Amino acid sequence: MADATLLRAVAERAPRALEAFYDRFDRRAYSLARRICVDETLAEDVVQEVFLHVWRHPDRFDPTRGNVATWLMTMVHHRAVDAVRREATRRKYTVPPIDDGDDWTGQDRLPLGPGADEAALDRVEAGHVRDALERLPAEQREALTLAYFGGFTQREVASIAGVPLGTVKSRMFTAVRTLRGMLEGQVGRGEGTP
Image (cartoon, rainbow, N blue to C red; front, side, top):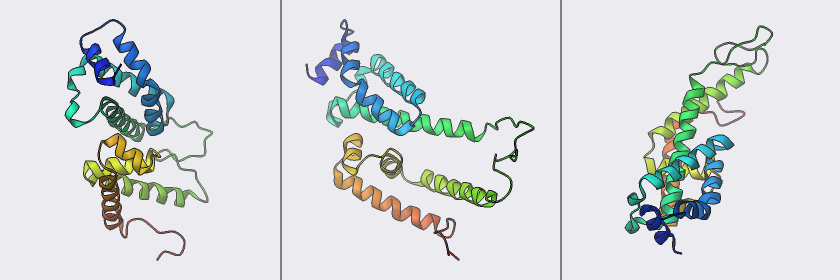
């Protein structure tokens, strides 16, 4: 049965249609979510959200914009990236409790003593990079996120995003050039940098 036919059966609430749809795509969906989320539980939650969305809104699929697999994997990608962002924000604003015996600073949980200054600088630089990424256009940020944080090849990014390979290459080139300009002077370039 073709993917679009199976999705139509889900929309018509045919018996076992959602189960068949899930069986067809669950491994790919989970694999993508796991690569982006890293955390197994977070990835499982993303996949559950996506299939629940398919059950509730199968009519949102637009065949003029791509095939069923691309539509589904794009949803998985977007929800996984959102889940990672939510989790990062939650962790950013959650200060873990300090045990009296721990040799950690309370605010940043950085080790005291040698190396603490480098760890603090690394966190500042990471913050600059995150801020710069947020200022990129969504299409460029998506391409970089999938490639660098998701571990996908440019060809895989093109398939997930539903755009030509040349478009992905162009978006990534422009994004890297833009980031370089935004971060100039804010992020060190390694040993010996003035």
